[in-house]
Length: 145
Image 1 (cartoon, rainbow, N blue to C red):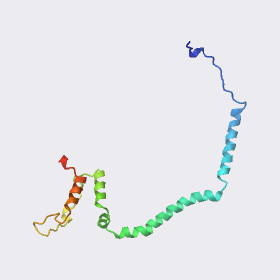
Image 2 (tube, one colour):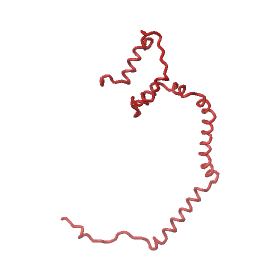
Image 3 (cartoon, rainbow, N blue to C red):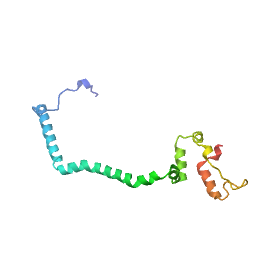
Image 4 (tube, rainbow, N blue to C red):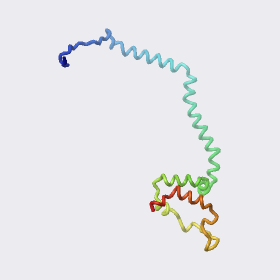
């Protein structure tokens, strides 16, 4: 009892009211005008919505220009870098595409002064050994060497 698509009667079951497509543009336009009247009914609120974001941007800019800029302008790059935690610097360098060779190329070794107390002094003599080992375990994978 299979029927083919060609055997089904083709009749239009949808009806459109008379002059529907002629009246449709007018109906849409009247609804658009009514919704515009409802939205624009409070001109103070409309102006406030436009002015408030601009005022906030100006206030934030003035705050940063007046209060934060003076401390940053007085500090040297070394002082600013000293405020960043070592773990944050290591994490940044680990996540960036900077290679060790690129870092070494940009270091001016002639400008660095090294001071040692005696020839036989250890570099990490006063350091906490456990903290150094934990740091090395966290950031260096010795098994790959």
